[in-house]
Image (cartoon, rainbow, N blue to C red):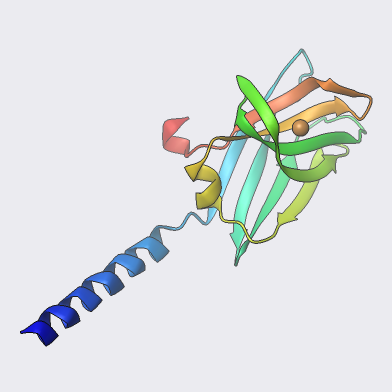
Length: 137
Ligand SMILES: [Cu+2]
């Protein structure tokens, strides 16, 4: 009987981990909303690639830049420190691969993708989007 219950709990664990694996978020689109009259609306597309997360920022009609971009702790309404650096946005686009990270880890915390006007005007935010599941947007 002891052996059987051990076997049953192993099966239950296996079922749980299979469920967790299928539920992993493969991709997520974050809507970037223009701030401070920049007109820089766009998207950031996060894609899980193995143990890395690829972040592609696309701002149609974005300026030549470069415009520094980061994943910050907090939300657009209350930006905190930099959590992850992203490639600067030039002509509205930027691609970054963040190693050893999952989209689900980002969703589990409070993070926002934020783009700054320029290296000399970091305090001016041109666009921002909270990293949240589409259903809670
Ligand atoms: Cu920043």
